[in-house]
Length: 310
Image (cartoon, rainbow, N blue to C red):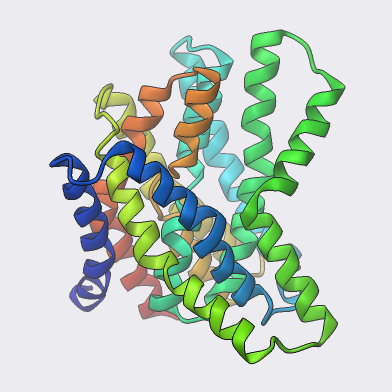
């Protein structure tokens, strides 16, 4: 446990550095926005392209793995939804809370950290999880919010969702990498070096950006934020454990990667969606902040545990 904790310290130290820089106003909110854009559109996309270009579509198509992750996530998602509805919260707010309970920071934190701590082989499985999060749950929250506000389901909404997915640089970079892999061509030396150099900026850039963005988030509504953090950091990986060990037949290493990914803190893009539609943005913000703080210990424990059984 302590050895894994030491290995995770540099990752969370970078988050802390970004947080400190923003708190003392050395790094402004505008600077955080542009750093996040650089990481999202360039550095992380280059990293995903490089990893996916070494994979094949067959390696990413694992029905048992997908069903295990999806079913475990749906259980926790429905639990969080039920609790929110029991408290008489609107369905749009329940959707935001449910999203916080199962969608982790896989892109900015999971891929850089787990690829280093669990090996490059983990990246393919992390990409499956990222795809499920973006395609299934990323679309679901928008559908629920829009329908709850407009009281109708517009056929053009599905078109906008599809276009949104196709414009997401993480999805695009994975697809382009897989297509390049399928071509059988190798990247020219200078191009490969360029992608490696650009992708290398993803880890420090993403972690620093996470910290800086946390400085602009509040810790209001502690009770709800604590519940959602508990769902994300504890219940979600526990549900995944049940799915991979008792319900579905998932290879051991793949199962440990899924559990580790499920233990990640609440994803920052949930706040962006909540703010865009003006649905409980402070609640999402508090859940992101609190879960990230506690994940320093819970993620280290989870990775140490899965490493011991792998």
